[in-house]
Length: 570
Image (cartoon, rainbow, N blue to C red; front, top):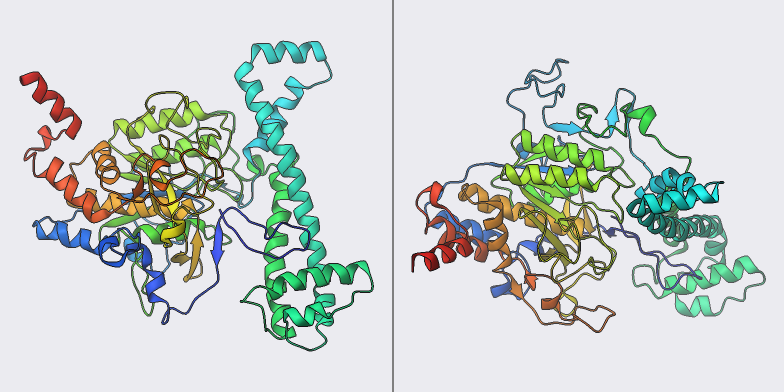
């Protein structure tokens, strides 16, 4: 879920990707920005989540914390990162690296979690998208050589046909865009020497670019790109050598991003599953496949998410996760650079639940889900075991009732209530009160529960480093970390009570949500809660309504249930 901003003469403004990377800052000069999402709104007027005051409140009540295991269902976690290693979950019943399944759970040497996208032949880093898999599977069935058979299949399999048509539309449109993006940025990459040469040894300025007189098409394209760059304060005034480095780095990342899309994600012939994982992918009953390779060395997503939940300050690094005092990270790898597969998601949920996780963070999603029923069964299993599911709303700047983002807890968007009661869906907010909704965040008054900080979030990344990323992928673990704090001090809370506590106590805002439609254009109308979570307020609510009010664990009820019983007594 990464977004990079790159100037291009024939693109509208900038090219935006799925998750945003922000330029590195100086840890010694930018401590305030690095920790902004922990701030107290009441005293700073910044919509942070009030982390430290939540701890102070709970501890003032004499409560003692019990560690809470949080399953990070993601691309993998660098378990040895110095900011994470002390807060990694360790399987107490597994002897490390002895090649045996000591605890008999079907997974050999699962010391810190498990990897469902690997096997004896290595690990999947890049995979295709679900729409690609659906088109490949169903195209011969619905649009084969026999038109009569096609029509019969369409009539016999209406739900699958509808999914195929939706997938085909996305695959066709986005596939073309991917190829165009790859060709575009490859061309710009090839023009870098031309652009730098046109500066004639002088620093980049709008005046210099305006004086350039192109003599051919390549120079005209180069001048147009330089003109856009000259408007960027991060590049304006830079020397030719600095412009060269900037362009080289930006184009390398852009070309790589679109190359993966064009050659793998939207490629009907690309499918690494069988050769690497070695399972029977169509057999959803299979559970014991994969390996214990916890981290994707090329990916940063899962490690960043883990740090937001449970990162610890170390050395000169001030970063800490919302649940840094209480959360233990279980690494469950199920998300490649591409779309997660439903079989892996379902198995990842069950693995985490069976091994003691009380909260699962799921910062992923996709527009179609062939195995959604299997995923829903796993979600119901988690609900029955009292496990909270925290889910990112998605980064498409869409209403999720109109553009469903799987996995969802609504079997039908017209349903009055969700399929399960243990999932909280999270949109992304910013530290800018005027533009409080992050412009990429999905939204809906019923299907998105709360908003949480998701822009310019500083956290752990591989190779023992730190970086700023943004996306609903970052907002979701803010909530997961907050939920871990509530459960650590009040372990008898149910998932429904945790959700109610977070939803009922948000800091609301009526600022313009910056949505193109004319309806629900206020920030308080684009989620159930209408605001950004405040962990201290949530702790007060949970303590008052569920913990203090119910001295015996067997009598803990939600506020709604208590009211209902009182009416019956009357």
